[in-house]
Image (cartoon, rainbow, N blue to C red; front, side):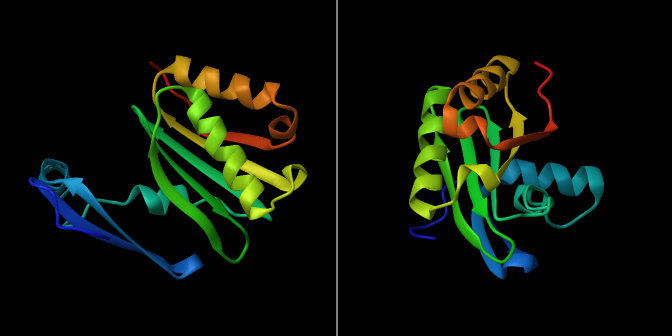
Length: 151
């Protein structure tokens, strides 16, 4: 992580054992305080732990969408090939990143699987799924949605 910690933020770290990866990130202090008071635990559960809770095959894309931010990862059985956080203005931004990552990591579309975790409005989710189904290469990817938005 580069730079200092922003005001009213806490530094958290999580170790993803299955990939031997340490992820360091910032969260607002109020979230940590709330979780500690409500659940009597010292550290917030990490979204990264739940994001990687599904088995990976040759090319597993994990997409977590919250408001105007999305986390995109690409995993194989043995390694984490890509992980980054992006802001987006529309779902085309997300599609562009998905296509770019798959292309750069040389993952065949036919063997890829996508887990979509949509903590966003139903319209954003619907737009993204519609784009995935329209684009020939992406339409070959198996899409799983463990979380369906309700707003």
